[in-house]
Image (cartoon, rainbow, N blue to C red; front, side, top):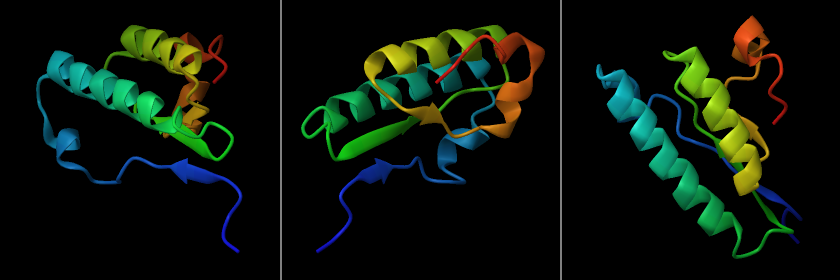
Amino acid sequence: MGWPVKSSLPRKGSSTSKVADTLLMSAIFRAYNDWLADFCRTDPTRLKGIAMINLDDVPDAAKELERAARLGLRRNDHRVSTRAPALRPVRV
């Protein structure tokens, strides 16, 4: 049997959370989101990706949320944090 849909979740506590350089962390997350979107495109009816977003830079986070949505990623891993005023217009 199995599940009809599989969400690909980023690992909690991954080593990227220890990166002190905010620009580097954003670049790592963008690369991950690109890879994840490509992976999910192999079977889009069953695979749904969840974006990784760097919330240390809120304007960049809003841009990456919008980009992730265009890539087909369903939502981000920081649902509660997107209540920040700068992120309210973003719907992923």
